[in-house]
Image 1: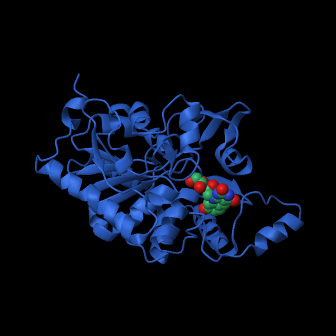
Image 2: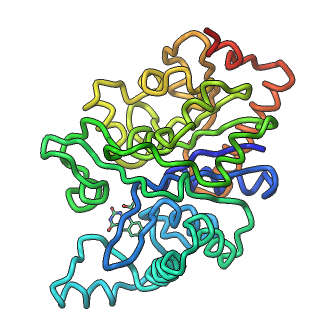
Image 3: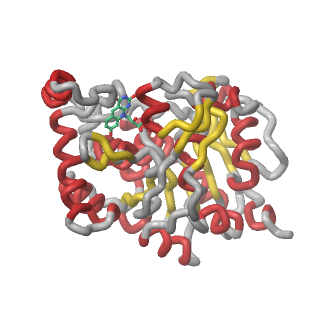
Amino acid sequence: MIVVLSGGVGGARLCAGLVQVLTPEEVLVVVNTGDDFDHWGLRICPDLDTVMYTLSRRVDESQGWGIAGDTWNALTSMGRLGGESWFRLGDHDLATHLKRTAGLAAGRSLSEVTRELFLAHGLAHPVVPVTDAPHRTQVQTDRGLLDFQDYFVRQRGEPPCLGVSFGDGEPPEPSKALAMAMKRDDIEAVLVCPSNPVLSIQPLLAVRGVREWLRARRFPVLAVSPFIGGTAVKGPAARIFSHLGLEPTVTGLCDWYGPLVDGWLVDPQDFGLPVPPGVSLRSHHIRLDTALRRREVAEALLAWLSDIRAGHAPVSFSSSFKG
Ligand code: FO1
């Protein structure tokens, strides 16, 4: 089994390639829930929904989230009532939040409700929240600690991000499917999607046991770079990296992830950039803007894994964490 760590838009696009080349039995997609919040009395899980709409080809490709052709009548009416309208919930999208909120209120877990929603979209590949427990990303900024969507949408990601945190409590437990995957001894690989390393992947790594599981691994971790030529393919990742004193390149990604990632799939123009010893680079186009390109990137990752298995592309994961 291959475990995929995904955030929203970039992650969803890579997953759309992976589900073209892997059966539901061969993969588990684990999605960030740190962006989730309550709005209009509804539970909103943006990254799970972005994966669901992207895989079912309902997504609004131009913005990367929400449903193509959605209408905004409820949002307009909410604004007229003096309600909050800074977070744009479309009319069709609302059905998802209503169904999820009702399921959770009836006592089902986020994993169960997510499964129902994905099956209703005709999606058989297992996509699960990283945790069923509350896990709220907060962004440290020069305007104080901001809730994720307040920072990302209401304040348009403008305040410099100095880091993220997840409250004072104990780390949340992994969801059941992830916990079971973490106990398996036949994991072939973990794939890290080209999602924002700080805002989207860090919340996954903050769930109890995930970092330790990766540190003790006997499987390779391959990742797709979210950067091309020093800029992010989408979103504020490059700006955030610069604020954190990191280069928005694969060199900075290695600084950020340390030895958690064994190999990076990078755009050909980034292939010569310096990376630490033991980290491998492979060059391929990584723009995920069409179904074909998504499939090709997925195939490139699988080809890399089969080269690793055959001993043709050594990675140093088995020795990285000794001692
Ligand atoms: N992102 C925005 O930039 N503005 C929005 O108004 C907005 C609404 C929204 C509604 C539903 C949904 O599933 C996602 C939505 N997003 C919106 C994206 C969301 O903020 C994601 O958390 C980010 O894209 C990060 O992955």
